[in-house]
Amino acid sequence: MKLDVTLRIGDLAEVPSAARVAEKLGFCGLWTSDTGHNPILPLVLAAEHTERIQLGTAILVAFARSPMDVAYQAWDLARYSRGRFILGLGTQVPAHIRRRFSMEWKQPAAAALEDYVGALRAIWNAWQSGNRLDYRGTYYTHTLMSPFFNPGSHDYPHIPIYTAGVNQRMCRLAGAVSDGFHVHPFHSREYLQQVVLPAIQEGAASTGRDPGSIEMVSGIFVAAGDQPSEIEAARQLIRQQVAFYASTPDYAAVMDLHGWGEVRQELSRLASQQNWAEMPSLITDEMLEAFAITCPWSELAQHIHQKYDGILDRVTLYLPFDPSRDGERWASLCTALGAADVH
Image (cartoon, rainbow, N blue to C red; front, side):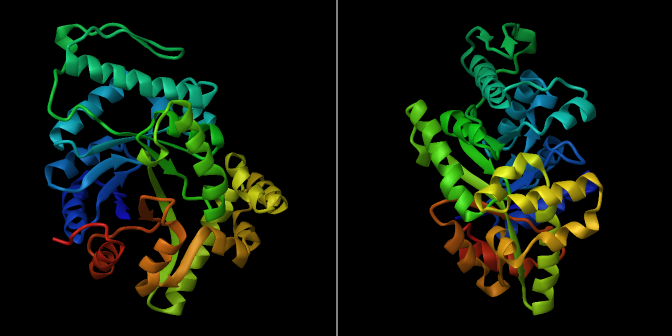
């Protein structure tokens, strides 16, 4: 199993040293997110200052950008990183697309994202092969590529595309067209086994693909530490995060699978009233155990294997990564998971 890390930065100046540390510790991949910063810019710096570690977006919001714009960025980054770049795409939710990005929300979202992926691959193929660009999809059309705007071919034309999602439609989409699938951190083993994997297998069967070729990636909740007080503090933070996700209608299926629909509805009511302080108390120990791993840090690798072997191919701990701290912990976990050789 591969162990990755999410890079959360406040300033681009922090990226070179953080990326070098992540690679030295033995992480297999470094991911950036489309939250407070553009996720592509830090990866350019990370590519410049590393040699081995894979670099990817988890995720880049597709519907906020034209496929052509993303195609250019990904093409250049794949070349600059010498084939280490993974393009992770997601849809976000209608409110963010319309009100934050002032863009059009496309429905059904899974069909639109599938078209987006098709457009990207058609653009890249035109650049690599020199053939005429003639992509005509339901949502996206790209039929103009004069030599002046063509960046030309390079040695790393196959850019893996990972898509993200929670519901069955997005899982089927990943099975049908994606190189990998970003599983949302708000999941249980049961949800992965009973909902996510069957839908991915169904999607793969629809296009004659091997579902085993689709890399499964996820951030995972862990409450780990060397002292009981450290573990308990982590558990309380996870209760807050789980309560927030459980209150969101988009993730209702996860709670409903376990028979926790009434709690989900109450959390939604509290969230609508912005009563955030009361929400974590509704997350029981049983729920916490379903969504998170709790154990001493020395046993963490064992617990990750027990929960995710045969389901996930690579994991990222839902924990802040501070390059100046806990290096020994991270390096030991990389080694224990078999993620990579520590340099």
